[in-house]
Image (cartoon, rainbow, N blue to C red; front, side, top):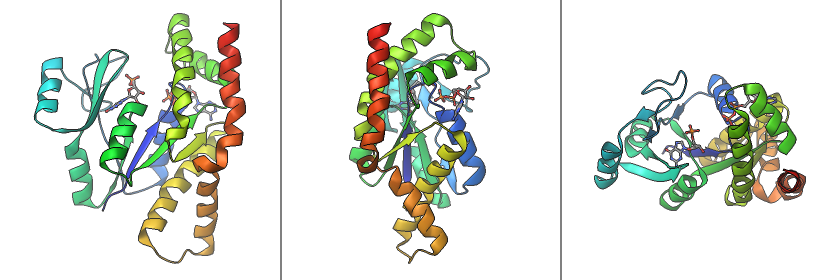
Length: 228
Ligand code: ADP
Ligand code: 5GP
């Protein structure tokens, strides 16, 4: 049985960076390429970042029941094709979904043992800094992304694991530990001492163990919103 990993984050938190690093160091993990009705941005290519489809084609996929989940995000439709899960299962691989909170909840309903991970920036100022330094968005777009982020992070407690992406190296190590610990747990074998370190690292990221750590992050967004 494949394990489905769901990862969500406000834009600029470093989700793409983390996922790219994870894919270099963890094998047996496939990445689902979503379908979307939004036009490609910058150097995006059809079939690489997304499958870019017209609305009629998207609706047809929905009608035929070909999507595991779908949602409207910023006025565009996004969806995960069921075939990615089938293909991962056939190859004995796990599947990683980069989807929003609405999609994450739909997948959790259909696949209760899917593992969900929410990535948080260390605080609002650092998120703003990262968005500026990424150099992809105008000032207005950055302002909008920050407002959206404040709303999105309120959903953090709907996820199994919370990853605070402060030092990249540590966040990558934690993300790897979450994936490996879930694999260990599902394999049901007695953990080695090396495995124990992985299990402990993942455990520290569990929702129930991060609530205190998350409070100043949430607060920074509330204070930031009040100032701007
Ligand atoms: P997302 O996919 O969540 O929108 P990106 O992966 O594009 O975010 O990261 C946003 C910016 O922040 C990029 O310029 C990236 O290099 C940088 N970044 C990512 N993680 C870190 C980190 N831990 N520390 C500092 N900068 C980071
Ligand atoms: P972007 O257009 O910036 O690439 O993505 C916008 C948002 O859509 C992000 O939060 C991303 O996680 C989400 N998203 C991407 N693909 C899917 C999908 O297949 N389903 C859902 N529900 N959300 C998606």
